[in-house]
Length: 584
Image (cartoon, rainbow, N blue to C red; front, top):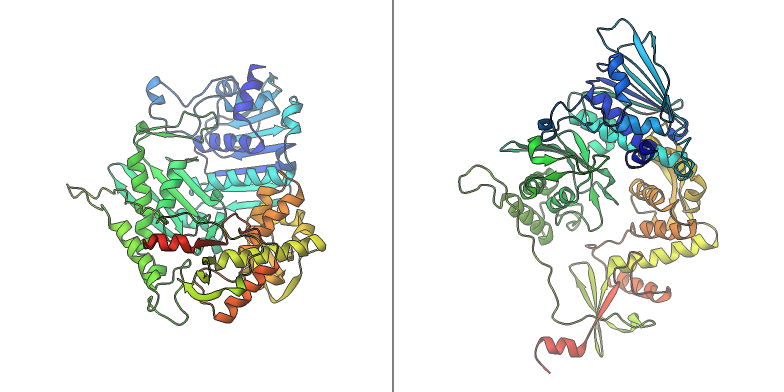
């Protein structure tokens, strides 16, 4: 019973088993790790490696509670250098499954096998076996029906497994990783010479082409890795990978530091693709704060934060997309070069240069990074109220536009400021919603199919939800294990980048579907799709286009906000404006 309770902390789902077993393989010095899965890990999880193996005596102890060969003394707890060290994993897994371990050391003439069912150990036996260890976990949670009942669909569990194998493969580029689900090979990452080669194999060449290397070293703290250009972003932080001394971790401070480096060049709500490895003295980081060992505590968070944020900002400040003034967030006017006629692009480059150069050297001139000051948002002196519903915008005088982002309208009793992107987003969302409620979103076929490269789990998820994806206006065909052919897109979004659009839709489906009904999940997906409207902030609009946009805004069920909750427009009363200039 005690082992089953402990298993609740260590073995959350099949992916937890994969993580613990593969980490043991890496600690054993394996150069090749093969993971075979059946039914999303429900019926079988098998991990085979070519590591150093175990002696018969060590195998008996391996499934005992709190027995570990990775800690020799109390001093080792202060400088943990292995991925596993608590001695809980195999014991916990054995208590909630039918476990078989087969292992052989190089110096032994025969291997040894041990079977444990639900925590009850059977006798071990000798047999022929290759050097290394094979662990087979069958019928996970067979004796804990409450936990088994909460296991998700095969595709969901497989997605979590693939995510962990991806993390471990990025952590150890020199090790070959193979992940199979039945007869399908989901990950095949040969041993790589460096992180760049491994990122290409695991994340895909299309992603890798947008990644840029960074490197920082100071006083025993090393930061290396890859970060994406601003043109490659995701709707959530799942493509951000942090490793501390080879261990994948989730840490809000590290994510904050990374995002600080992207300040001003990445839209709000978007996240980069990043693989950052931080190597430091094990004595100044505590990894023993969580049973699953995915959280850490730093002795000095300030030093780590400065190293990450400043090294990322340094890469961005000298990257080729900024040198050519081609910010993918703020675009110059058509035909302009090097930011001519576009002061905002120059402001971005200037801000990034200041960010990267600020505090590059300490008083001793040793290259210590320091955190730049983040400018505070400008606050208007008085409150802003939204317009009343049913207001006729087309009846007001068009003053012009501000920064090619905001439409200015004058009225007898005040002034309206309309966010052109939020307005277009709301219009598109309402049109998509009405089409979806009537039957399905109207599609437009593409003359030439567009290919989208994804991981195998996402492709499988797309196949499972084919009907819903078609109802959203997409027509997609499988083209290999990790590639989709997009043959039709929603007609209202025909000008949007369809590969990015579909990738975001699949991400939204993965997050929403299963935790809520399809009706509510569909609204989230339609909101994400509407965000890809061709009208963006920074696009110059003619008076005719502005008038057409305002007329369309009047004809929809206008709630005053975009689908994500941002206000579409704000009203400044005449009294408030006069108060600014002390005319009252």
